Amino acid sequence: MTTLHVLEPGLLTTVQDLGRPGRAALGVGRSGAADRFALRLANRLVGNPEDAAALEITGGGVRLRASGAALAALTGAACSVSVRDGGRSVPAVLNAPFSLPGGAELTIGPAGAGLRAYLALRGGIDVPPVLGSRSTDTLSGLGPAPARAGDALKLGTPRTPFHPVDLAPVGPPPTGDLPLRVVPGPRASWLQADGLDVLTSAPYVVRSDSDRVGMRLDGPILRWARAAELPSEGLVPGALQVTPSGTAVLFLADHPVTGGYPVLAVVLEDDVDRAAQARPGQRLLFRAVQAPNL
Image (tube, rainbow, N blue to C red; front, top):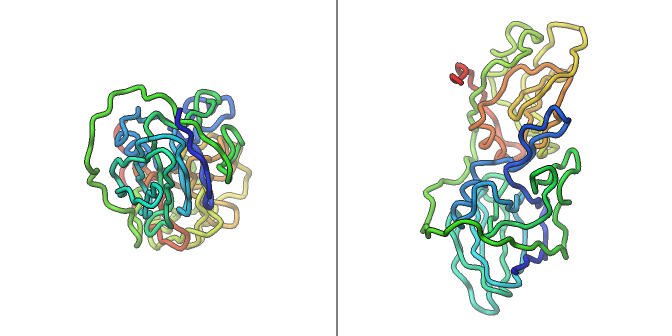
């Protein structure tokens, strides 16, 4: 059985799959990959089921060594990728499957665009599931701890046939202003009448203290219309919550199950994946749209 040895874990490297949906009533958040599209793509490229566990790598700067041969793919943030087998270089590019010979060293460089890269290996990362998922939830502490130097991660046995793919035609995450579609939230009335207009009138900037729980944003102040206390209620990924000081927080994969501040708007699900690739200092442009038919 092939084992992946962590030599350098980078800023934050966690095991992620598609999370723990359907357990919010028990106080358990979904968690899972922040960019679900990139995770699914990486798994498809190596012939895994879309929900197989992979590594979510924040910012790059990771080095790994495989004890045996493996097939790998890297998607998401535009990181350089190189494989060295002794003194020999093994071809490897983003958004395409590549071979990882036994004993070879895999280096994932800093992200040039985007924030989170996804490394899938055929067979998936075989860590013990917790409540049906292998995901690391950084808020609750469920799942495996973030990777550290010296960790050894076993790969599972492939469960599906592999159909070779040369390259997925996926562009890098945008580095400029990032448009995000929003619909009115359930508590828009708790903000002043022009709240949604203020949100969509000017850019909001991603702060450096953002994480997998949520993106803290700097931008025009959003003012409450009421002084009353709002009882805690359920939250979803993409919820834009407004604090009493008027700042906005965009919740991501590890968001709390409930919150007590009003949700002015909700980012559409497909755009939450794109938002998860936004880097500190990048500008978000919120655009109001009609709610999709369900």
